[in-house]
Amino acid sequence: MLGFLGCAAGPDFVRPKAKVPSEWQGLSPEAEGKTAITSDPAELAQWWSGFNDPLLTSLVERAIRSNLDLRQAESRIRQARAALGVSSAGLWPTVDVNAEYSRTRTSGNLGTGKSGSTATTSNFFRTGLDAAWELDIFGGARRTIEASAADLEAAVHDRRD
Image (tube, one colour):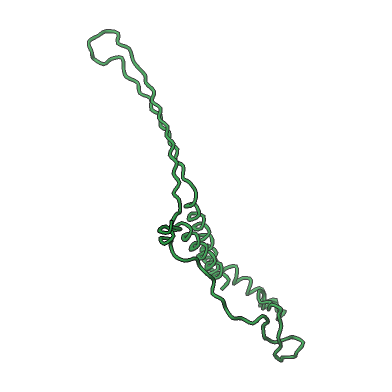
């Protein structure tokens, strides 16, 4: 049993601990340009709306709609989600089913010299079922899933960037 544990596919990932303050330091609207400590998140999703300029708003919205980089980033997210689904399939059993049918008919005129030979028809059926399940003893499939999940998270953050 101890020999199997030594063959695992690497240590578990541990997120690094970042030293960040519990509150952010920034400009406070009521402090009139002075630095203040606040725990309220900054609203940056639509920063341009603070200017109350309809032309600027229309330009930003048009740029977002026609932004090819954003479309590519969204397609990378879809691709990473699909890759995560494919890698997750490694933990499940695989099943393969096949079926075959053929029908042959021989002519009554085989040239055997006999008169009145009859035509014959034969049917052939074949079916098969294969099932396999690979146990993830050494953790390779789980590591692949972790890597795919990290790729998906990176693609989401790339789009946000």
